Image (cartoon, rainbow, N blue to C red; front, top):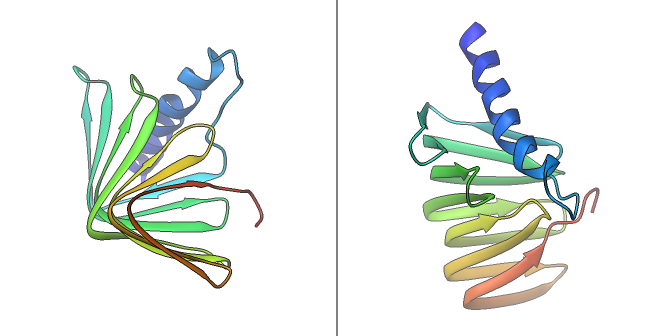
Length: 133
């Protein structure tokens, strides 16, 4: 249990440190990441999440097989075969997702997004995560 708190503390540090120095005051808020395995790569300044990755952001649930949280690049990458995203309003999948502190998200590779009855398919889709959608 103590290890889970340490991981949570590290994740929060990775998320809030780059945002604190950002002039645009960007931030990841209300985010939870769970996986079977977490590795810290100090050289590349990344947290690597593997196996059964589940990320919750403002009512969205994103699932994949691997995720990389990069403090240097200020983004969260999720990979799967495919990775998926769900909320009350959207349902989508892609080979990869990139999420940035301003909650802009890219769905990359065989991307499909169903949003309020509208279906979009492409190799690259940009979507803005909206809190309490």
